[in-house]
Length: 400
Image (cartoon, rainbow, N blue to C red; front, side, top):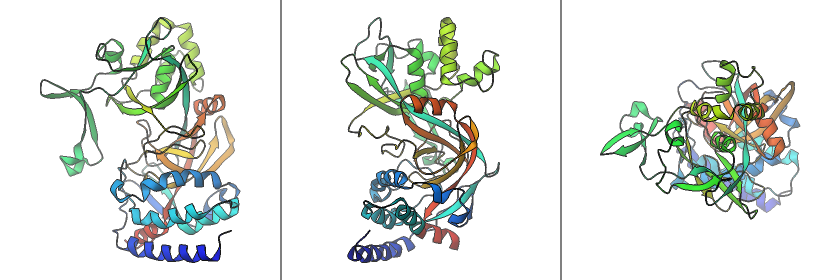
């Protein structure tokens, strides 16, 4: 329980933060996003969750959320929420310690207001899963370790089109500079046929091309070296090409059946057809570049788009055109391959992904290991979510 003095200090801080937040303009809803205010009693399963795990995830976001210098960093959402709106919730969250699940639930109920989210296609959308993959690699190439992981090339250019035309805000292009001209960056097929060879961009060398492709899809992973040490790698950038699902391509070609295109199914198909692997990978022209990640706690996941470690089972990748990074989100969907089993819990929007597009769309971070791989590979669940806005931002939104 909080001591009386702590409670008084929090109340005073909340009043001060509320005054500062009241000077901020109201959040502007992005076109296509509809928000409907409602009570917590309307959130399916709200009281059954243990919100303490979500509190851990939320606290990891707070340093970014409350930093004026990082205002809207990594966030393209028109629903941008000011640092002043986050200071009271983050201060109260930091003061909680050794408290029960009920007390943490009541904190979220005090600090946030829930809104049902919907878009042009309604209030239901697709929720998929991802995980942190483990690969076997080395720092130098050999007959065993022959597939490179590349760092970001020095001719890589990313342009925010909104800086040139406000109607294009939130749209970016990626390219390379050649003889003073901006050209599209090399496709996966170009790179795998040697477009970057000889430029010293190889970070590590991996023993399995399927694992490397999975790393590109997941965006982060752990590489175990021959001496058993681990190098953690994370997303540094992509080549600007559209993502295409090779699982869907195999289904369309009649090689796999619908519902039977998990990573294990794809790997088995490649083992049966090794001569077709390169051509299959090239069907997805998007290519990912990586960087070494330092200082991440062993129990935490990789670094997400917000720049903080992800929390297994409590971090969600979203389309940040609609959902601000750092926002608590109540998810109402079903377990992978178990449509009758509800999966309802509080998560925090802390990541983004090229394939995560739409108002109601999310990618659930399952963590690391065999169970995470299983659930991530199987998850294609329909569901909906509710956005939890800080009270001060919610009040200004209601008055706008």
